[in-house]
Length: 351
Ligand code: SF4
Image (cartoon, rainbow, N blue to C red; front, side, top):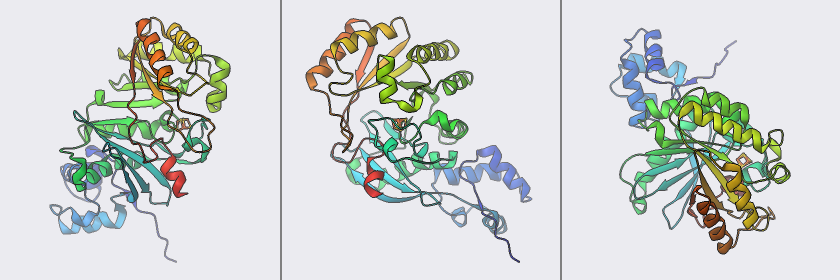
């Protein structure tokens, strides 16, 4: 009886691990550096494309490994040059990734799970359920694919590679801790993306925040707060209701102490829910004395969610109150109009 074993992916291995793969096949360890170059710099999709490897070695690799890239099944391009790609993984799962070419940098927003188990009330990803966590290879693949897609689209006017990565797409990165951390390290060591140009965003999974703090990395931690009282947060983020706001602030404080890095708090403004002047005053009081920055995100409407975008005046007032309380605050630009820009929307439309 012939037993077929599934081939492993080369993508997701770092230079040293690829060197070990080469040695196992009777080659020198420096071949690992050559394979890494093909995977992470030259975008090889097939082992047979790795032309500077000996033919026999390529054949030996092909028997045991694949490269492990995804396929783009849909692309949506906005007038502001933001673009979203729907990617099909090897098992058929669909995930989204976003490219944001700004004037001073080229950012990619990656997903860490297919769907999400947290089920936030205002989120299209949460509404579509949870399938599985992604591997480090599937996370890094998104950054490679966004970079490759950008150079094929003249309208995007992108010169150069992805410079910044935000872990803010579908899924909760800290519930997929090992793959997230491995992807962070690969982006840094193999794609040359500076640690300070990487942001990991969490909905407030406290054990993950403490674990990440202990790694002492120089990446940016963003914590999505979205509420200023316990009941409101439990309603909006039911999947994290076991953690109180006080515990989240304590975890943020520990992260700052361990890493000496400022923490970002994301606050999604929902009309009539959490966008009042009183909410702004309470947020300022909650964050008082913390080395932090608040990013206000006016809600991006998800069909059927029941939430509405805040009035511009409410957003402006909220901003002014935080600023007057000496909290550093920015407002996220509304990018991606017309391309289902909130995470999970494009996948939902294709489901
Ligand atoms: S907002 Fe983030 S954590 Fe919440 S359901 Fe959506 S993807 Fe999951």
